[in-house]
Image 1 (tube, helix red, strand yellow):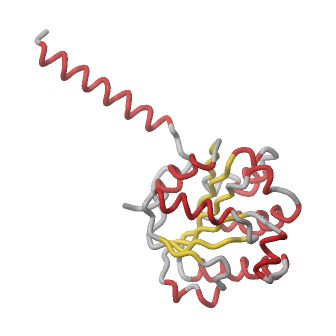
Image 2: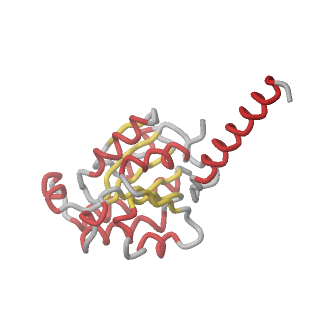
Length: 191
């Protein structure tokens, strides 16, 4: 075999290995569903919104952030996708001057308006086990079933609540670390 042919075959083999490794990542979401720009908001007022902000920024996804946006203000943002950073924090709720019940009502109205506007909704829970419990579960149960796609850090889904809420209709991707959530999040957006 000529050297050039061997090099070409070797290069092709490397490409196939790389392609199969990329495919082996195997996101549950098989094709992009979301468009930019994005509106990032909190559901539960945890500091997790800051981590999701970093994930969006690192992946060059154009977004604005409003942790307290109401359904009535959603159209004015001109966002095409709503990203929900889901995780309850009594300290965060207190700092925002909002009760858990009022936050729940805000989230429900926000989701209803997003659906009415034809926006895609991506839910993301990066708080892990530390951000689970009665308060967060209230927000998780109220929002996840209305998402078009959900990403969760595995540690926060040990009880498989997210699997139960997503069922077979909502793609759910689980990652081991917060930093790994950027890849499936970026893959959700149309180029």
